Image 1 (tube, rainbow, N blue to C red):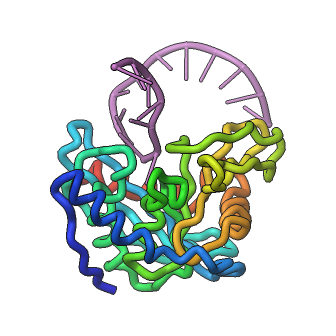
Image 2: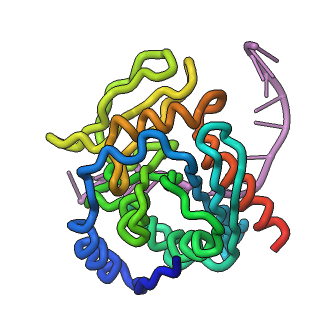
Image 3: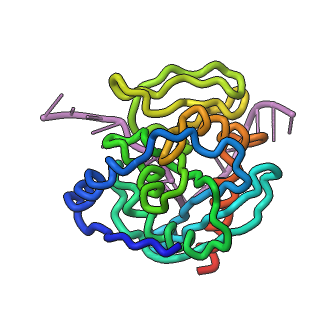
Length: 223
DNA sequence: GCGACAG
DNA sequence: ATCTTGTCGC
């Protein structure tokens, strides 16, 4: 699918777009409980920040093997501003998504969804634009407070921002730093954590983002 | 006012 | 994100 979107030039414009999209986020669904296909998205940057490569890799959800993928190269669409991260990477990621042969049942983003100062992290934004179920798995926090989860794999603690629960701090590997899981669009938090654990049988990060990471790095090196 | 701040 | 050495552990 080809997605039409207007990309901001200024911070004020970007904030206005987030305000407009935020009410369109669907937080009702449990999301796909037994998806057959799950896609991972990631972006790699050149040393001088002049170029980037965006990759989308679709995995068979059961075997975690690659069944489709796409990569695009280009330039960062926006400066890096915490909270406006999506405007930097989404144009390239959408271009990559457009080249996919199959439509994934779930998109796993490298970053946050609801766990965002205005509740519109990259995962939510991508969900609204594509209409597909999305979730975010971040390596480091952006907002919120939490208690360290127990040491075993599967242990978690709520990620809160004031009174709201915006995500979950989830341990995907015994004794290893946890990840930050939050819903994006048409996805429930319990399910997002279940899917994250299913995607991390061995490593800290989901196999989807690991595959996407290696692919965009390779593409960047060649460009 | 002073930090913190997805990738 | 990216630049980096050695080091600890399976």
